[in-house]
Image (cartoon, rainbow, N blue to C red; front, side, top):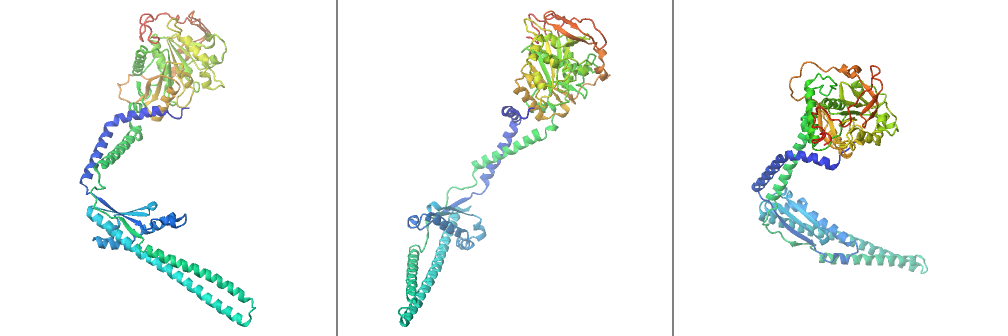
Length: 589
C-alpha cells in the first residue's frame, strides 16, 4: 500500500497552487510592506542614550582566590540591581523632571561581568532628555551604592569589634584565674590548662585584629566602589521606527497572512471545489468526464445510454490520437480507491474500441475482487490465475481467451478461480509479460490483438497493480467525481510513478456537471448477468501464427470451432487509425 508521496511530487503540487496565487501573494506582501513603511515614517522617533558604570577594582582577580571572578560578577550584578530600585528611580526622576512610573518603563540595564561594568540605557523621543535621564540614573545609582557600601563596612566593622572585645575579655578572665591558682598552689594542673587557653585566645584576637585592619584598608581604597566609565550623550540616530526593517517585517507578515488564506481556500475548503480543480491540485489532467450517477455502468453490447456511449467514443478518439505519438499496445485501468468504477470503464472502453474493429483483449487483473466475468455473464473456471500457475511452455495453451460473435473484435481473459498465492506475486510472474508480448506481437509480426486493456485493483488500497506498471504502455486513473479525496489522488499518482508506469490521465465518473438531456430509456442491468447476450465460446487453444482456435463448449451448449481474426490481417475499417502498412495502426505506431 502506498503510504506517502515523494517530496519532489508533493512540491510540484504546491508549486502549482503557488503559481495560481502568486499575484495575490505578491500584492499582499507589497501592500503590507508599504503600510509598514508609511507607518514608520509618521510615527515619532525614539532615541536611546546609554551611560556605562564600572566597578573600581582593576586587579580584583589577582588579589583574591581563583573564584574571585565569580565573586566580582556577583558584586557587579548586585550594584546593577540598584539601578531599578524604586528609591534610585525616584531620585533620578526628580532630578530630570519626570515621574518614577514614566521613567521606570524606559530603562534597560545590561551587565558585563567579564569587564566588571554595566550599562544604563534610557529611551525617549527627545535625545537630550534621554541622555539627561540616563546620567541622572547613574548618579543616583552611585550614591546609593556608596551608601550601601558604608552600611556594609559599618556592619562588618561592628561585628569584628564586638568579636575582638569578647576575646579580650575572655583573656582577662583566664589570666585572673591563672594568677589565683598560682597563689594557692603553684603545682595546680589548672594553671597549665589556663595558659593554653590564653594562648589560643591571643591567636584568635590577632586574627580578628588583622581582619579589621584589612576591612579598614579596603574601605579606604574603595570608599566609592562605582565610577562612571562613559557618560550618556544625546544620540543622533533613532532606534525606532526604521522604515526599511519595518517594510521588510510588514512584507513578511503580509506574505504569511496571504499564504494562510491560500492554504485555507486550497486545502481546508477542498471539498467545495470542482473535481477539475482538485485534479489540478494533484497535478493530474482529466481526459474524459462520464456524467450522471450511472455513467460508469457497463454498456455491454447494446447500450441504452447514448450520452455515455458518446463520451466513451470521445475517450477512444483521445486514445487514438495519443497512439499516433507513442506506441500504446497495453492499457491498465485502475481507480485510486475501491468503488470508483474502474471495472465498468475498462469494459466500456474495450467494447467501444472493439466496435471500431480494433482487436482488443480485455483482461481481469483485479485479483482481489474480479467482476468482469459477472458483468459479462462468463464462466470463471479458468483464466489469468490458472494460466500463471500452469507451467505449460506454450502460452496459448495456458490462457483461455473468450470471444463473442456479437463483438467479434473483443477477446476476454477472466481472472479465473482464486488462488492461495498473493495477487501481487501472481501479477509479477513473467508469464504475464510473455502473454502481453505474444498477444500484441510486434510491427513485423502482429499478434492476436491490437490493444490489451487490463482492469486492476485500486492503487491506494492494494499494491497489486505495481507489478503491472512496468509491463504496460499507459495507465488510466478512474476517479469518482462525487467524492474526490485529494490525498488519495496524490498517492495514486505516486503509486504509478514509483512503479515506473506512465500515467496518461484521469477518467472522471459520476460527474454532476451540466450535460445534455439524457435520451429515453435506461441501462438494463439484467443484461450483465444474461449469458445468452454473449453466446460465448471458451477458447482453450489459440495460435497467433495460424490464427485458428479450438473451442470447447459455451454457456448455451456445445459450440462449433470459432475462427479468430487472422493475425496480422488488415481490417476493413479502422476508426482508431489507418491500417498497418504505410500509415500504421495507431496502437503500434
